Length: 162
Image 1: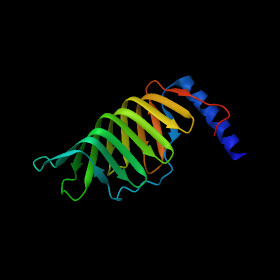
Image 2: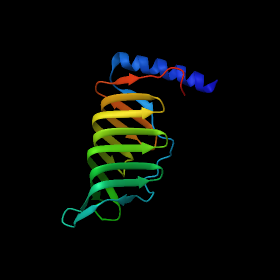
Image 3: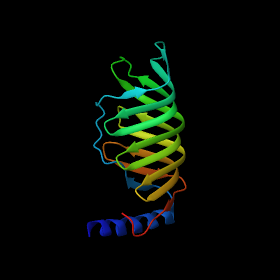
Image 4: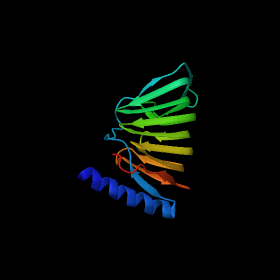
């Protein structure tokens, strides 16, 4: 019963969202964001620059934090000014972000680790179970577990599926 009610509410919300086509907000991920959780990075290559406090990972880059996974061909890691932690992750070349059962794809992603915000741009595709949303830009708030879709928003709904 709850799934049916949620599906109906989501359907009308998305239809209304498609009508005005900008500023659609949707839930994202089944996790609680923890900005202080360790960040694990694997890649084929690494180049470090002490001069500008960055590290550039290339080739099959996979980054994990909690149950979130980000993959891309290239990720630049920008460290905090005191080099005690990570400030930002700049991913490019085709990015995939997965959290729980939700997944998003885009050309680029900018993850502000300190703020817990991920901005994905360029042909954004958000998949949640059988439903999809497409937009120009997505702002993901990891603490709130919400995504704001901006630009031309389009959705495909699969009636009768959870």
